[in-house]
Length: 260
Ligand code: ADP
Image (cartoon, rainbow, N blue to C red; front, side, top):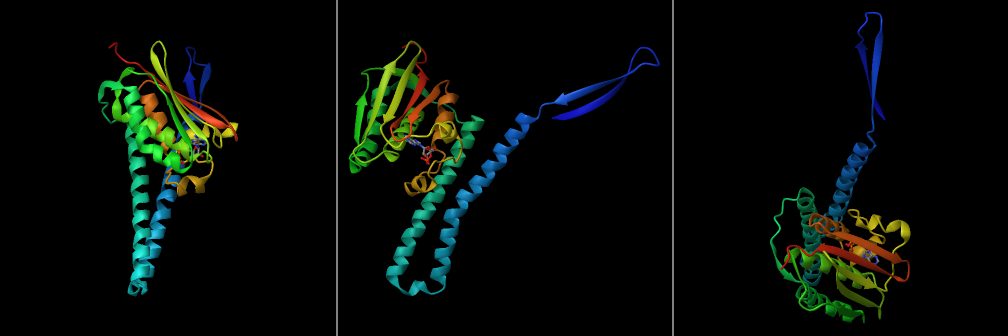
């Protein structure tokens, strides 16, 4: 708590008073901490691939250049690390644009089923590789007044996670329900699940339950943060129900938009 003391003169000469103002700066301090944590985390995440790149270039310059096989192997790793760097920077920039709301929405009539099917085609092979049954339970002809790319990105992120944080021979079910003013899209999996106390934290920037698993599969730890911003910026909300070792269900509620 911060306080300011202001002496005041009252009507009569002999009476003096004091005004003491207390400011609750808990929220300001919290926001400052969120900001400094973000800078620290971002620097750390960026440093990892940069350190790898530096190590490999140095080794090459020290003589490993001579051996063609080693050279190609190193260059391949360096290429992967550069791509990772690009991915992290891309996600940081996107998150920052979402927070500042600088991106213009391109609103149009969006067929929900078509978008879900396009995501299905991108991710189904990945699911099959893990023997995961990716099921769709969607409604024909349901349209919303929305930004198509945003919807696609929300679904790509959530369905990708449901495959990633799942077990072999698990399932992922995408279901759509039309409510009075909104559409509910749920992505349910029977994967590894999330402990209670971690369920709000996973929407924080860079928070992951298992850092290695996330990194090895190409995750930046920013996906859910980006999804939450996209959903909330467009007047929607996102909910999560999960049980450790049983599975998770992420539901997004998006406004139907203007009457068609
Ligand atoms: P990333 O997947 O890149 O690590 P996200 O922001 O998408 O980052 O997710 C944050 C964390 O939330 C993940 O690292 C994982 O620990 C957890 N998580 C996300 N989706 C699921 C899910 N469907 N089941 C279990 N854990 C999940």
